[in-house]
Structures are given as structure tokens and as C-alpha cells.
Length: 298
Image (tube, rainbow, N blue to C red):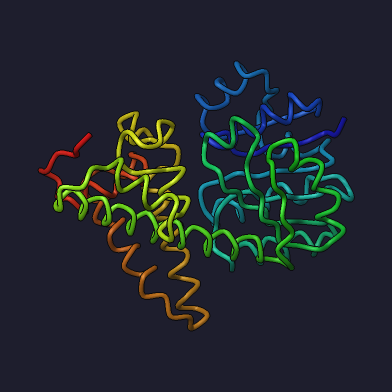
């Protein structure tokens, strides 16, 4: 049994912390939001009165927070309170620069650290089937892996500090662009009189096959488990996709990479969020492609 502090109990963090409890670890968690702390208690998670209290007796500290500035703020308070040798793991999706800064902060106190963002959405968090992409030293990764395996199905060491965040934003840029392409194909099929099922049956077994089509199909029917069949209730909200696409663009500009499709995807998701649809699943971008007043076909 490992003593774990878990900071950040939102839609992703709470089920991740719960899975650590189910795996037999001693978890003491914290979130600034009282409602989220109460909800965590109902899941059987012990809750501290502050992040500092949570980390004081922890062997491992896991953070799952909205943005880089939150990670830096929490780590600034938590690192001085941590016991010698405590491993810090940030599972948030943040900018690469902040991730590297967090590693430096931990290193200044001789504490090991990983940036280990996740893919898999809320469904993966609940089912403990997340993919973790980790950046940091080999020794830190080896120590973290058994803990991450309690929350995920695939654990990948991507390289040194910040490599996990780099992998995450590159992956999600692919996802955002591919979902737009799949949505455009279905809208074109509708205009040409081709049924959703017919396009799916062809493309899902042909060269157009991709995860956005076969697992997360943006129209109702072909993939019963996709959010399109439940009113686009989010597994991964459009606002989160927009956040990741913006992070990718920031990284592209900083590194001098050319990402024209990623830039366009960020613009389109920005428009979709401006419609007031940021809380819907990101696959709902097909409605923007159609035009808001046009109804989807079953």
C-alpha cells in the first residue's frame, strides 16, 4: 500500500483517485471546490483540509489541474511540505514550458517528478483504461508505473522532462483535425444522398478508417457507444479540445513548426465554443460544419 496525495478532484481526477483507492492505496485528496471534496468523500476518498496537509505524509503526489499556472501554484506550496524522496506526478494537460518549470522546481528540492498527461476522457478515467504519456527520468517513471497502472491501461515513457506534454498535444491535434475531417465527410455524404451507415461501413474498413470514425463516430447510429447517441454528452468536451489545440499552437509557434491544419482546427473549435457549445462533446463539431440551424440526420 502506497500513501498517495491526490490534488484536483474534477471530472477526471475524482474517478482516478477512486481507482487508486480501489487498488488498495491510501489516498488523501484535496480540491479547492467544496462540492468536489464532498463528492469525493461519497466515493470513499479521504479528503484533506488543504493541499499541504494532503502531501505531508505522501510517498507519491498526483496533481490533476486545469492549467499550467495552477500546477505551478500547487507545486510551489506542496514541494516544501513533502517528505524527502516523495515522487511528484502531474497528470494535467498543460503547456510544455510550465511542465518543464515544474520539473525544475522539484529538482531544486531533490524530489523526482514526472509530467504524465492522459488520454481516454472521463470514460477511461472511470474504467481505469487511460493512456499515460510520461516525461521524466527513467527511475521516476519506473517508480510511478505501478501507480499509473491502477488508473490506466497503457503507460508510455516518452522521454525527458516535458515529453509527456509534447506527446499529448501532438496526439490531440491529430484527434481534433481528424474529427473535423470525419464530420465533413458525413456532411458531404448527406448532401449526396448517402446514408450514415453506408459511409461508415465503407470508410471504417477502408483507407479512411480512424479513431474519430470507428470509436467516436460523430453521427448517431453506426457506433452506439459514441456521444452522438446521447445528445453529445461529453466524454471529452469541446472546450477541452480547444484548450489542447491552443496549447499545440503555442508550442508550434515557440518551436517554429508549421501546423496549418492544427491552426484551422483551433479556429473552428473556437467558433463552436463561441456558439455556447463548449460543454458539449467535441464530436459535436459536425453541427458547426452543417450550420447551426440544420438538423442532423439519423
